[in-house]
Image 1: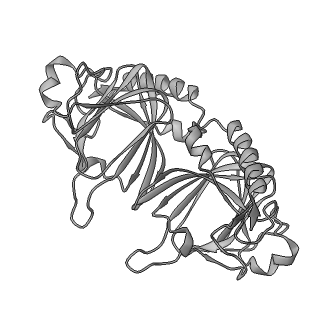
Image 2 (image 1 turned 90 degrees about the vertical axis):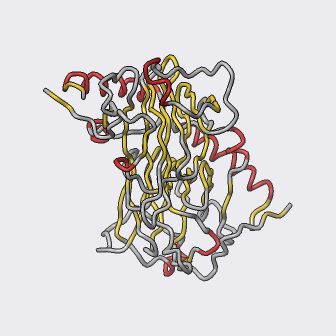
Length: 181
Length: 181
């Protein structure tokens, strides 16, 4: 749950970070920016701001804006009937992103989930993405990421998005953000 | 057919146009830029430069660079067995793009195909795309586009790309570019 004023403030800060990246985004796309707190009510630590450029029945192209040190919690995109699940390429456009997936856990990782949620972060193989760097995750692979000290702007190029079906490791997560006045 | 030197020159000019757009592109992506003359041996008029950021079995994200007034000839992305064909969103990132698809022909269009190939351009409903503007074409819809007087940088966000299966209206087109020394 976030307040209307938290939502507005996050949108404004994300728009400022976005303006440092050189990608063209229309004002109406910025106005429709989604502020997501994953139902955890700690937006500064756990959250993401999403600007949607393309979202069809087949593919999506989105810009994800992370505020400084903000984390998108660990999740995966599962099979849904005939759809094998979302394949996603994460590409850094601005700033620095600490991205984690399955594999040998990285010693002394740069990413730091909130201490009280640490047990819900289970994959620790680190990829440090700087502008132009990218990773492609097949469907159903657990991953999470954190913006660097100045935040980050990252592309998400993917097959069809069905956000509400994403599976989060943290049972407290609710994908739909409740905004209160 | 183009010469090695035409290819190099087109790459260099396209990289200069690309540098005016703010999108981050790695040097190795620029080095692998595809220069396409569609087999017409008139690259200044008919051609495109393609920088591939993502190209998986499911989706692609590419930056198309048009030199000033350069045209990508009319084509469509047909069904291929179980694959219903490429769905493509064209989004202008820099410059101006004159894009044509089916519909009411536009009077006094800005686009001008080479006179000797004009009969191979059959769709004339015009969309003028400026930075941030975009159009999505379902599979198998004929379209063509021309860069403005300063050229253009446009995104192509799409489902799976199978360039060699594209169907061009002009029977002279060959999708694979032959480069000679």
